Image (cartoon, one colour):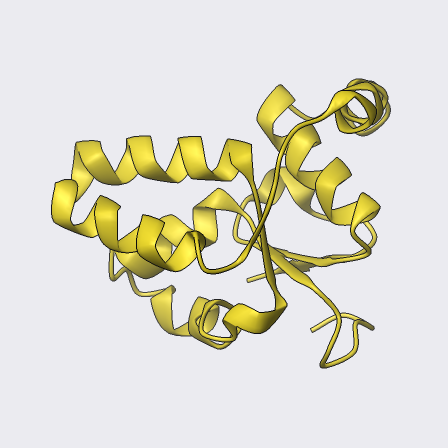
Length: 129
């Protein structure tokens, strides 16, 4: 983990949710972060990305199971401030749109971003598994 405290928010990137619900080899690494729902925040873009991926690869039952967990967390909508911040972050950090929104959300919420996506490598506040 990064310097985040045990009570600070955690944002698990789409890759982590897909690994976890897809029961991949990395699922166990993401489990401690995803199983503490009281700390989890989920950007709406993650709802979209994970739901779509799980519907395509794991089926509706697993995709619904993801939603049942995600909806018990603190879901963060994309608002005007996040959209503007995301555009700047996308340019400065050379991140794709969805990744910039996810990173901007983590920064705005003072959350640790946990991911296996190399696009976030080297960014402050990111734990790369």
